[in-house]
Amino acid sequence: MKKNGAFNLVDPTTQPLVASFNVAPRLMDIRGKRIGLIDDSKTNARELLEDLATILEDRYETSVALYHRKPSASKPADPQVVGQIAEECDGAIVAVGD
Amino acid sequence: MTAGLGSLVQAQWNDPVEAVEQCYALGWTDGLPVVPPTVQRVEEFLAVGQRPADEVIGGLPERRREVTVGKVAANAVMAGCQPEYFPVVLATAEAMLDPAFNLIGPSSSLGGAGILVIVNGPVVPALGINSRNNLFGPGNRANSTIGRAVRLILMNTCAAIPGLFDRTILGHPGKFSYCIAENEAGTHWTPHHVERGLKQGDSAVTVFACEGPRQVRSSNRPQTMLYATADVISSLGTSMASVGSVGDTSEVLRQGEVAIVFAGTSDVWEDWTKDDVRRYLHPRLKRSLADLKRAGALDGSITDRDEDEFLQLILSPEDIMLVFAGGAEDSHMAVIPSWGPKVSSTSVTRRIHWPPP
Image (tube, rainbow over all chains, first blue to last red; front, side, top):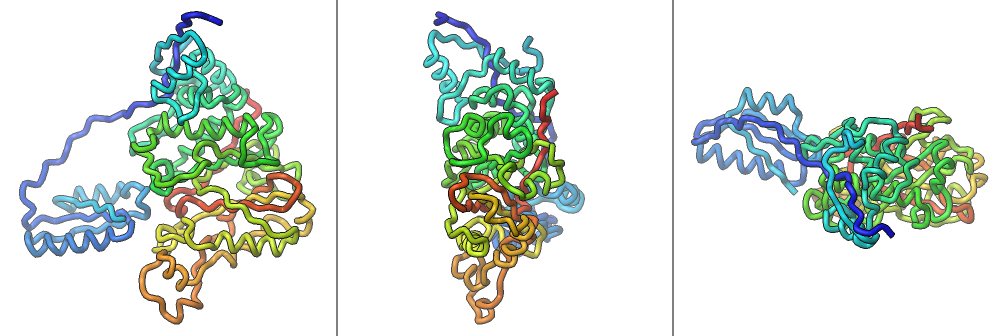
């Protein structure tokens, strides 16, 4: 048997490739803002978001500018909808129901 | 020559046990010992595939990962594959990375999908991929290692690591290895890959995110066998009869798929085609709204009408995959429900570049 063998191994793993991006400015106050809601389509996501929207409307006079229900929790939000949120909303809330 | 292989790890060992232990220490295994992916061995695989090591075959954008030919080769080596198996493993990886398969779902979900690999075509006898007795069991290198390579690729290149991004609650043994082939020589039925649009002489692989196989025993008479099979497919509690698949059928592709493996002899089915089988099964793959509510798949209280109103668990006959495989001694079947609705993951068939260039 070969003694003290040195070997080069191919690393079978990958590392995340994270492109740089700019974070949108954070909302410092949500009073009167237009909110977008994204529902992951799992059980209770809609109920959670609707209750939250009511609370925000009552307390902060926010309005729901857009509601998007994903076709599956496993799928990303439709990029067109994400673009629309950027155009039409001041902020967005994503609910993960289950 | 190590071009395109990505980062290398220097290792030193005096005996095989040390080599295996180093791979454990590097966190590269599925819990079983692996073959160390030495540059030399990985290059033997790449020589068969004749594709550049740094060629990106797809990725998982949600985890910011890209998968290259070289990484697939390294994992195939570790799984214990022979170099000749590499075209099958590569086609399998490409199929899993097809957007329709939506790998992020079955590689992370609580539902614990295994990825069933179904191989068809001339590659099956050429590589000795088992399509007969002990179909889902151990004992055959090609099936065991090709299926195992799938899991290592998921864990190592897609970060589907148990406890990290793989959040499976139970899972099943098919998550270690889940590779079968169709016994095309043993049946008059149209091979699975030909039903999916490929040619008879093509070799192909189908990937299917699914639960474990449930055996069905009945008789050697087609109607009784299919009646029992339909009952198993329509049972409550599978993913196909859960809220994710039937809770909101207003959207397209909401229901799941099912694969059925037929063992036994082909002459039992001499008067039947695969489409005949689908025509018999499809209308029976349903459940009453009342039952779905009793089992918690649908919300709401049960009305009188719910006893007589049925919901189709498999929407289209095409969503029933039929594979002839297994031992010839008796007509057993295996029912394999999808992990989720088609909108979350749809089975994908890809041609294998076989024979290799």
